[in-house]
Length: 264
Ligand SMILES: [Zn+2]
Image (cartoon, rainbow, N blue to C red):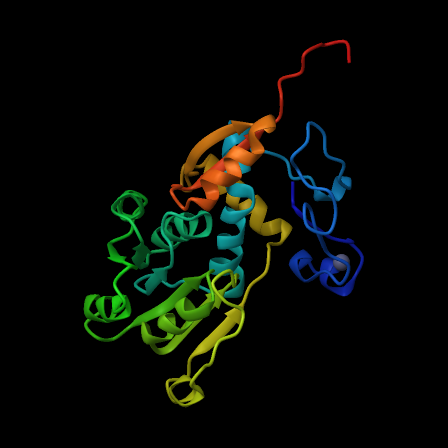
C-alpha cells in the first residue's frame, strides 16, 4: 500500500509524481492509519506484491525502503564510483540507502551511535562506518575520502546533523534530506555552499514507481528488510516504547490479530 494517499488527477499525479500530489494525505497522519485489522484505501493506492515476496518484507520496506529509493533514484542520482554517506545505517531509510547505493556502484560510508548499529551497517554493505557519538565524526568522513568529501549524503534527521553533513560534502556534492526530527530550523553558511556549488534537495514520500522498484529489488534479493521485532496489534504501546528507547535495529512490525473465525 502506498501510504501517501494521492488524488490521481492533479498535474503531478498525472505524470507519476504522486509524492507531489496537491491533495495528498498521509495514512495515519491526516486520516486513520494502519494499526487495525482492516484498512480502507482507494484501489489506486494498492501495489501488487511480486511473486515470492512476503508481507513482512513488504511491511518493512514499503515505507522507509521506498523513501530511500525515491531519494537515491528520483530526487538524486548515484553514479558508479561515487562516495555516498548514508546517515543512520541502522534506521529504516539508512539501511535501505546503504544497500541501494552499493548496488548502484557507490563507495558507502554510514554512521551509527552504537556498536550494534555500526555492525549492522557493515553487514548491509557499508564500506566504512563512523561513530556518530564523536562530535568530530564529519572529520572521520573527510579522512576516509582523502579530505575530498562525499558526492551524496542521504540525510533524514535534520538539525545539527544536516549541518554536519555539509562538513562531509565534496565540491559539487548533493545532500538529499527527508526528515527533521532533530530540528526543523538550521543556520546555513551560504558562502561555502555556493562557492563549492553544492545542492540541498528535499525529498518527501515516494511515487508509485519507487514502491514498485523497491519491491522488485526485494524480490530479486538486492534489498533486504531489517526487522528488529514483530509485535501483535494489542501491544502497540510496547512497540512504541521500544522505538523510543532507540535500542532498535531496523523496523518494528505490527501484525494484526489472527482471525478467530472463518465465518466472519
Ligand atoms: Zn494528485
